[in-house]
Length: 342
Image (cartoon, rainbow, N blue to C red; front, side):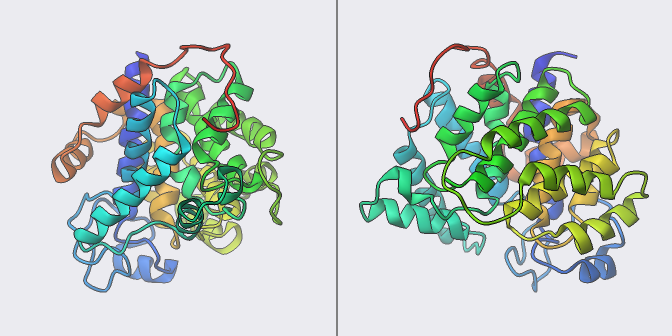
């Protein structure tokens, strides 16, 4: 399989997971099971009582995919680099556009606080010192496309570079590095199990970066979460992820939950995304991260053609072209030094 198919799989998988979780996000699992069954069967429109996405049509993406595409364009424009201030201003413009569209799915708490601090004159190294939520991990997949897993320290450097302004804590950087590295390994040809192993390795390397923030070790949480669902039926795995791993927007819950969904369904990308979208809480983000990794490992053709067509038509996006452009930056400047911020 050509690398283009793996790269496209990462972005398409991210969008599919995101859109599957659009109507279920911010809901308790019991409500999801009552409305959609143990595992959601496909794309659904958001009902009027959806806390963040009321009235959105089936197949619509949310902030996870939109911010990943925002980061992708900055990487492309910057030749594989991202200016932290440019990212901050791009996020603000994106939020203003979301408000004009009437959306409640705006910047998360860590990103909002960090961007406000930056605009108030705080140093970039300090703006993200309290950012421990999953906002960096949810949009990090493009970094996995532009960097090779052959040099994980370089990959972690780039994760830090694109995350420092909003999520400059060891917890958030470890979660983002885990997702980026797993995507990167999948594009290189790794299967899901091996990609998750590479992701854990990257999380360990990133955990000492940025500011310390009290919380569990993300790499260990990923290992533990994956072991919890080993051998379980997907429905039982979803219930265990919700009750034990946790599905909040905290990095130490959301990222391990995404890896657990992968561990429960290593060979079925469509089921992985549907399972992750059914676990409750921040499940659009959990499904987006799971979808990006499984898509990178299995390639874009592993997802049902009608699901891919729905994503493209409902959202008017050409993810394959974006993936191709990102892939063109891969392996460029492998030996370059990446500074703390640009």
